[in-house]
Length: 449
Image (cartoon, one colour):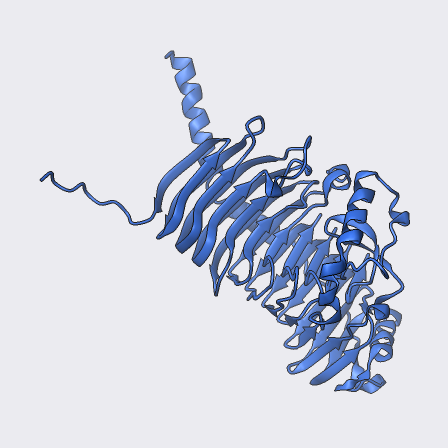
């Protein structure tokens, strides 16, 4: 080996090692540039404009009036005192508004689908379309917040739950429209298609705060951050166990902080997305990026997920100092397939404690075995300081394609105390393992008899 090659090799190895340190400075930079909303001093108490917190009266008109008064005053805070406020229809935000639910206040939405018409522009599992309005909907707003110690109840466990068995035709049609580039204005769903609305959706919004509230019983995804940026979600809690009750779904989202959240969901706790298939790839200029998840308690189906709808790409995701408070099927789950394209890169996960899972760390480029022609790039994934008590299926799974390998995976200080299957590593290159223990740690060898 000549000296020039040796120097190049040493520089390359050093650079690779440095790039896989948890990038605290980058995390700090993201958090520091996220802007909290600035809310004007105007306040309106909903009780003073006709609302009744008796769980029976329809408060739709009072909440609409409160939002209109805020708009007239260039923004303000809508105060919801103690009580149960039934609302037969959606809340549509305007800019510069804080919806503040005081302690023991609950907003309880109706579950009649016709209350959420006319349709609005939204997204459903990665495809843009017109559908029932999300229960709380903000479109092209800035400086908006939902705060306080109260609860938002989506009443999703009855009529909305029954939609799941009937959604197939609408779901398939939406995907056909995506693949065939049907103009969005012609993608009309709503009545007759059974696509459930999200509970809270911020769409094309910026400077968002969701703080300390409790979210229960959503019809579909709980908190959807769609094409939004500069978002802070902190201190909230969940008990939402219906079908597809993801906790937080950043999609085409940028500069997001999720911290101190207590999850209890019927699906993914955090699912980072970026559009589906042809439509997602056409939006590659707006990947989901710069997302920080820290100090959270996971409970539900999966902890942190990237995909499967991620066709515009997902990059710069930082997860740290989280633990489970109950069962998870999978701890960290990166999933895509050959329909998606796009990329998942620069993902750093450290200081995580899992209790019992089916699979602890799972990366697959062949989710559901679907698709062809658009294999995704998965690269630069770093896991460090992760402890798991038990994996009833697999400890670590990495599944690439033979002609599109997953690249540059670092596993450092991983301890999985028991697993049915230790490691399945297929079609990956540059997988670096340091201090990885699955099962009982080996000690010094025993003496020969």
